Image 1 (cartoon, helix red, strand yellow):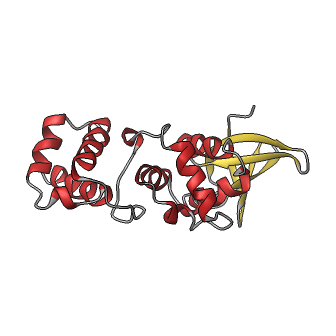
Image 2 (spheres, rainbow, N blue to C red):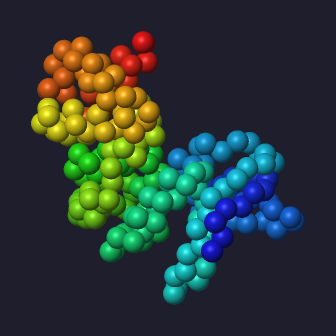
Image 3 (cartoon, rainbow, N blue to C red):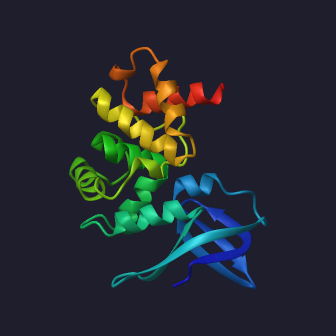
Length: 203
């Protein structure tokens, strides 16, 4: 399997990119999120890849800006009736962290924003991934993270603690920060993560 390609960006298209390596142009499908993070044409870059096979279309090469997106693509693609097209659609409208938060929160509505992904498929994705995804896998949290449902206060606090200790903060730092947040028990995961990070970042 081709794990990655080091080369120069030859052409960026809608849904794909061409990477030139040693005189060969490798065209690969790529999510909208990955494409939006690419530098300009003729810039040298490493693209992580996955080679897939379909009986109807033959071999297909998929490209990713980082390993975590590739890993989630593999997870999505392995779910029954999802496939590579739907997996790419999900990763085009959601970052890996947004998808993780939506799965943890059971937010099928957020996932079904992806073209071609209906409510039933979104629910299937949540069912299949909820036991495989850990909040500690979150790499970053931002104010525009996917909208999530409210989760009971204790569960939210525990998830925030796991996420932020996984990012390098000590348990004591996180707990002290959460103690200073008014209404923390009524916050959803997204809000409490963001507010806790704001307090930690101000110290």
